[in-house]
Image (cartoon, rainbow, N blue to C red; front, top):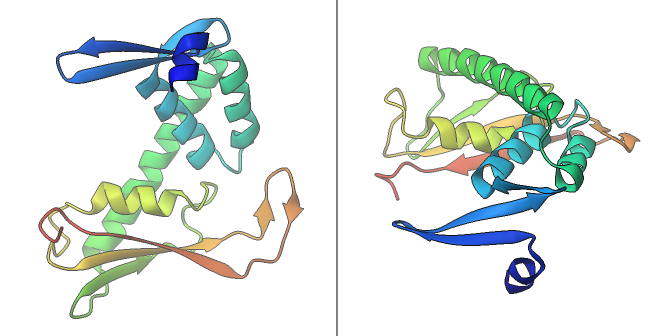
Length: 167
């Protein structure tokens, strides 16, 4: 961090909540939160839509109009997929004594498997869930790695979260 500040790659400003960070990308300084949100969206939601190379481009050149529009389209796609899955879960979520779980199978495609954890975090406090039970989400891992090609995974990713009450 000290090296990044000395080289001008990161700027730190004191504020009433502690510190606020800026990240220099290309020749422009961006709020760190904006950079993190855009990279998270482009990389996670856009993983199978050339998100990785676009993320590298963001880090090298900054956030241009095309990237901002792409990220906005991805956010709309994510919200649509999440809303549909929430409606499914409101109808039925399997439970055991200590666990509630769901399997989105391939319904999150074309988003990357990182998104099952994002989804669990997003819904963990929602009223239709039992706040005294662990929450587990499963997502099929596609047999494709962007930029690499097909690979036989035959796997499922699991992410787990707990409510604030259970914490």
